[in-house]
Length: 251
Image (cartoon, one colour):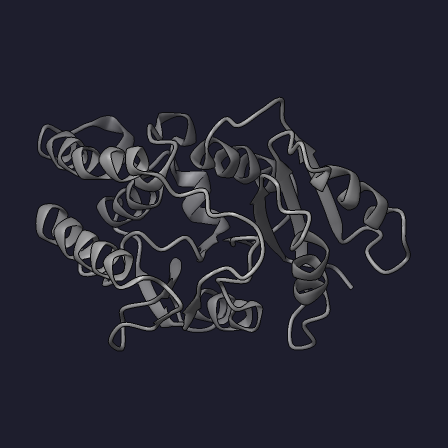
């Protein structure tokens, strides 16, 4: 059976999670998903684990690996993954974390939102039905929630979870974007992608999820990432006001 959906999972030091997250995605019964791991030269041997998995019958042809030279940023990892997907025949491309903070079962709902419900972009939303975050410190919950509110205020988007990293794109959305014009590498990358799709007139639909903080491994979040997002949102709004060409569809 031909698989039409690709799940992109960037990794850096995720040896505790990578095997189980891949298995959780591949074993979903309701829909078939391929997986692309993009590893930034993890010193803990994450890539070696993936390479071994790729040799087994369980994952043969369903699991793929892109190895990069070092920590080059979340945004550049996803851009590389998007380009990889567009070189193949995938109709839906999904971003997902390796640490089980995004529930694998919700992949089906995200894909369905784009395939059957008419969305161009489907966002796994922590804030659509309240605050659905488990095991985060209250300070981080408040920072994330109000960051999304700040983004809505500046950009005019109605998306409740503007910083979400669990997102499904129809192929046509990624083809229409100038992916090389996407500027941000960290936290602001997720905002920039949604805002670009919004400015291009694509339909964005949110799907409620419960976000669970990682149990194994170490978070990659940092203060500099939040700073990029804060000032990046203003830059995006100014670019939209002055008609930056990156918001024009390529097709």
